[in-house]
Picture (tube, rainbow, N blue to C red):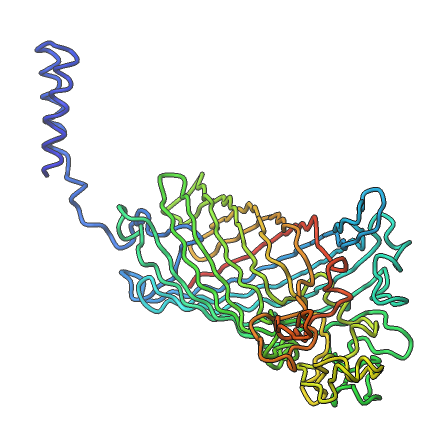
Length: 524
């Protein structure tokens, strides 16, 4: 009633001031009288079926709930399809003097190796269950329908493979073209909780703030390095300890279990994601921003377990941190019929820390039959009891090294997992969501992602954290003029000179991914 009396008086004063005459004052008084006769609609109670203004936030910060006013329980089921196509250029370090390569003995990373292509098709399923007001439990399960990888010629690199893919003298790491086997299966099972700490639908003066955590659990076989075209007498997916890749144990240095394996599809890790998003709708737009962080913990049953040794420098998967900014535009909506159209424009930036991961060369290097990658390395060194300066000078080579391999320690084999150097990723996407009815909505979108150039194979020969003794130091020592030694670290058992030494490392450049996604959601 107070608002209506204010409106009556204000209308009369405005009319008088505009006209400046008693005739218009009489008209204003009459209009005020008409307003006073109208029912006070603003003070009437809202009916149960009347649409509530701003009762739903944007797609990103929306949380299904339960035990709400007029809505006891919510359950959403979503299904979607996603296809991503990735391309990149693989190059290698070289000191070869030549146009576009190097001069003056300088080591560059410009030697063309291969053109990389990857295609992934996924079927995504998600179930959201409301637990309480602004609190929901959700389950996600990405099902990989097909994942394929291929390495082909890059500007004539296939013609000089013996140089671009050289290992030890007379050795080639793999051949071009190289094709990985197709992979399919459940990528992981995710279980998460989302809560709206603040909700603009409940208090229009505040934004909507979502916070959530998600656990990712592998339910399929972890990925193993494989080749679609093995040499005669070799198997497609040999175990890392199967040195000759025959599928049977044939030598004293081979592992006890060398059965052929499946290509696998999961990452062999348990993931924990923490995310938070903030949005605020202003009429027809709803800008938003947020952060995500993904922590992964390797499973000992995966190939990570074979390289998880005390003196390993890096054996954990990379940490991935994301920041995203975007805006949702709502050009049309019919609240009475629960229909509407929303456009979503989004930018995402990611940082990938250094970590051991599945690189673009995972299958090619991991399935290599090159002896420098197939032969085992031992986890530690021991003191050489035969070490003697005098005996060494007299010609006894066994007495020259104060430290020798401890063949009683654990043997480590190369699995294809590489130490990936840190890099950033940038992705832009655009999507449209059509709310077709109260209980149904559909989404269609496209995206483009670019990964910064980064190194593959950053393992260092020594771990400086462990400086136990000269006997355990192996080659990680420095000898002085007086014959004494200074220990600089302990040998890294994952270091392979043919792919990790300076001048032999691989790099990824011009990595771009195009993706197309579509989904449908049914709300109960």
